[in-house]
Amino acid sequence: LGGAWGAGAPCFVESDFAGFPIGYADLAPHYEAVASRIGINGARDDLWPFLGQLAALQPAVEIDHNGSTILGRYERARAKANKRALHLGRPRLAMLTQPLRGRSANQLWDTDFWSDAGRSVYRPRWTVDELRASSRFELITRKLVVDFVERDGWVEVTARDVDTNQTETHRARTLVLGAGTLGSTRVAMRSLAPRGARVPIVCNPHTYMPLLNLNQLGKPISAARHSLAQACMVYAPDGLERPFTVGHIYSYRSLLMFRLMKDAPLPHREGLEILRHLSPNFAVMILQHADAPTPAKYCELVGDTFTVEYASSASEKTANLGVESAIAKALLRVRCVKLRAQHTGHATSTHFAGTLPMTDRDEPLTTDRDGKLRGTRAVYVVDGSVFPALPSKGLTFTMMANANRIATKIARA
Image (cartoon, rainbow, N blue to C red; front, top):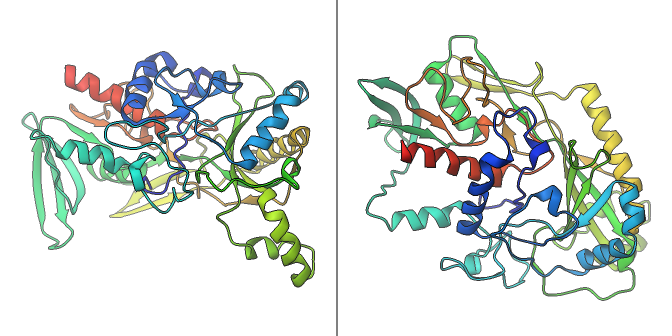
């Protein structure tokens, strides 16, 4: 996933931590530490309060024709847009605009989903490469972790070699699980869960909202550009102190014309010619709705089979559609016309979380505020498993900051 992510890296702000036993102040220094390590660009603009303060911020990357014309219109219509609870600005992206740790600034070649030339977009393997240069680090590959047990002051991890299918045991004083939400949960449940146990799961519902950018009609397009989000939108009808909805706007250049043809109410020959001229004016906004646990969203381990059940309720779907309708109306203030939205289905965003949630309640298969898995002496969880709910934001940057917080405490213990 880290090889193909959109590199969105906003901080959670205080309202995003509703239901968490920690808050923004707990993570603030760790946001700075991670940003200094991986490189994040952005701007001090109207979205600054919504995307979080960050001192270690590189200058915002240059944006393309869609981004510049939409934000230019917003500058002129800010008062009307804000009255509709619409705020626009630059996205926070884990992409370099200045050299950092042997990596180069983005060259605006529009190949960021296909090539890592210069390594400007952050990938987890850049950090692994740095660690491998240290004599204090050992990378053991091609092992499938099965479970763990604590014995005589050690944590013993059972793993299976994926090539030989033979099992082996590794021992450590402390075990840190960061195998992704589903991977860490599977290991924890195999090790600790009683038969029939279930754990919750949350996942941001994603909506793809195609937009016709009327600001761009008849204007030249920019050849030099990056492939990631060109602008960011926040819809905040209740202000900063209440949950708000975040969307990222991408240009349509990388997608094939036939994907538009099938929805165009035009004869194919004429439709192709019209769409060819209109395509530079198309953008796609990806909305990430917030999500919270319900009885219809859970994981369970039956024998050795790990299953996930996820279904949004009718009320959740209605609420999300209401938000999308309000956003579409607000976008008219900046001359962006919504086309037919695409809803990707249950739990398809890969933003999984909430399976081993941080909580102050002492319950099985949960973690405390420092990430320690309850029922263990020295097993910690540092991925999205510990987030009890998801706001309308990508979780990766906050997950990394939280992992840095937990690891710092372990190292000092």
